[in-house]
Image (cartoon, rainbow, N blue to C red; front, top):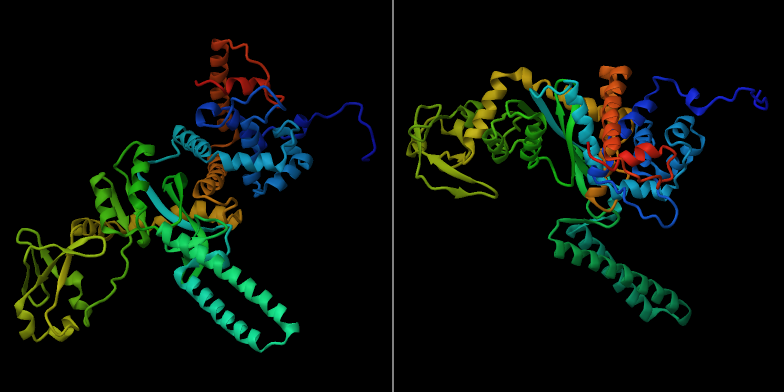
Amino acid sequence: DRDQISIFPVSIDASIEKDNFVRVIDFFVNSLDIGSMGFRTDYGENGRPAYHPKDLLKLFIYGYLNRIRSSRTLEKECKRNIELMWLMKCLVPDHNTISNFRRDNPKAIKKVFKATVNIAKNFNLIGGILIAGDGTKLRAQNSKKNNYNQKKIDRHIAYIENKLSEYCKALEEADDDKKKEIRDKIDKHKEQKKKYQEIEKQLKETGEKQVSTSDPESRHLIIRGMITEVSYNVQSTVDGKNKIPINYDVTNVNDSNAMTDMVEQAIEIVENNTFDAVFDKGYHKAEQLDNCHKLGVETHVAIPKPASNAPDKSFNVSEFIYNKQTDTYTCPAGQTLRTNGNWYKKKSYRVKQYKTSYCNGCELKKRCTRSKSKRLIERHEFAEALERNKKALKEHPEIYKQRQSIVEHPFGTIKRQWGFNYIMTKKTKERANADVGLIFIAYNLKRIFNLIGFEKFTDFLKAIIKSLISTFFAIKTPYLAKYRSINVFFTIISNYKI
């Protein structure tokens, strides 16, 4: 009976199961040294007490784990969700406060993510033997309609000029009753033309190939095949042992130049450079491979199909044997191709060219090349890195085969199961990073929980909190409640480093 009064009131805590994941969130956030992470904790004493960042962080982690990212929905849930009432201690921040917290703390959120990685390392869940990198596109808060390149701007301006020409001609022939209507249309089109000219000016000043008006740093990117969206490209590095992401970044370009940075950060996180790194063909770039090899990391990066092949595949470039000592190539017909030693500049790299005078008299020429002159072989300045990567793929195919199962575990969960296939924030990549960071924090906490269980996880977090408590009593600060949170004690100790 909903109207029945209980003699023994039930507390909110008694309504939350002892092994409920919401308790893990509470322990996790209370174990963080929030002040050192960059969250603001030094609010003034005037005005209404501020919400402590720990409370807002708990709210967001809970929300993302339960597929709730909207600040308005989170505000509503604080009023009706008993788990959130317990977690938030019955606090109900308004949606602007909630939204501003996410917007203003992308760097601090990244440090919270790193804390989840450190927990995984503590439980030996990070192997540091095999890492996989990949990127996935998440739609931005910007429609295709509000994304412009020079071609699109030219098309719009040409259309407007054509319409203005028609209206001017119609104005000369129209009677007085119609002239006002036509002039209004002319004014409207002139305003539109001015708008496109402003966008064109922005395009030229920035040197970018495209401009997004709603979310300026988002870009029109290929999602798959011929399908395109205005998106951000989320780069993730995942450890192979338990499919735990160890790093992420949000970019607005393709994958080709991302690998070096991903590998460098992976070395720092796993604290070795002896791991194998697997990436798909989108990352296959000679200079990036060379950089990784210089770092001591063995790469297994899929090789794209060559842009062109010989008429007979037995005469493809891969069939020409390179001799390092003599710096020559031997063709399938047994002839030697030599270089003049000069480097020739391509778009972003240099090559040496190899050829032989024997081509013109060769009976196999039609099978070897479509060129009327000689067969020309070009050797990339980072050819050794390309060859080393190719050799690793050939000798250890079982390593590359693991790539998809490693990287698709987090991305599959995030996009398919949780439905997070778009970015919630807009205006900058930095804000997008905050949204993505909260997604990966939620994923890692859930993944660690599933691997080690409630008891081990919470015991570890309690030990960290105990250390914070010891630090607090050592400092003996007289500093008292300055936040709205009922849980004043954790508010106080959060200002001090362990």
